[in-house]
Length: 78
Image (cartoon, rainbow, N blue to C red; front, side):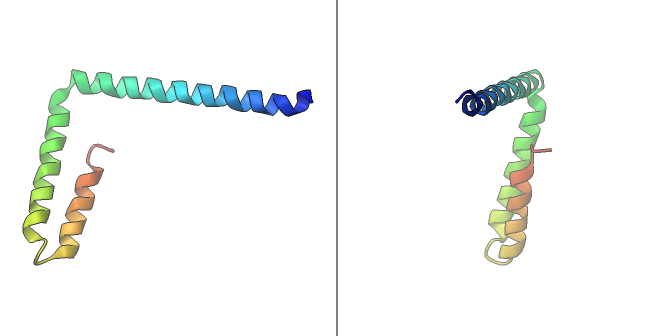
């Protein structure tokens, strides 16, 4: 029976470590955003401009509008 519990405990501790790493990553990203808000503001403005351009051409060129929206959705992920 102890052999059945050991993998479960290892898996649980790995999950805890992964969760802690994710928490640290999020905290670092928050700190970066708070220290340089102009970067985030610029990204939001860029996303809004792409969305507005997509709205303007939706009726005439839906494929291009979708491409602009897709591009807008990836801003900030780099």
